[in-house]
Amino acid sequence: MEEAKVVLALHDQKINALERELAAMREVQAEIRKMNEALVTLATELKHTNEHLRHNENKLDALESAPRARAQSITTAVIASLITGLVTACISILLA
Picture 1 (cartoon, helix red, strand yellow):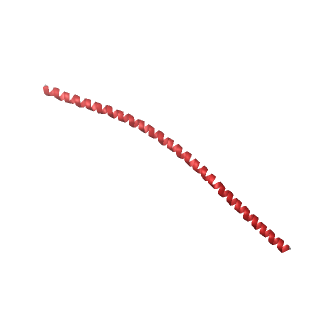
Picture 2 (cartoon, rainbow, N blue to C red):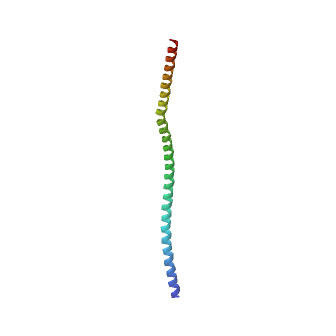
Picture 3 (cartoon, rainbow, N blue to C red):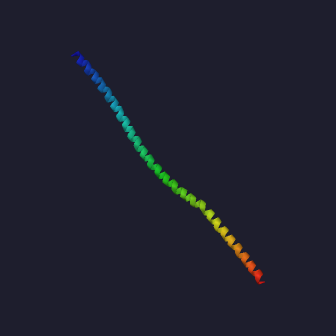
């Protein structure tokens, strides 16, 4: 009978220890859930930030290419004017 009480006491101790571990694991599980929710929120925000960054990069590319396009059109206009002037001068020399 005495051995049964000792065995029961040991079982009670083990059960209590397991219950404490289970409670600690539940706390850890709750923290993991909170971290997962925070990670999902962070990932969503990161996705939106990347979209805004891509949009701003496209705008920057457009702004950077505008002066280049203007310079090319000015260069084309100057060359066309010079050629027109030369052709006009040649024609006037030939007619004179």
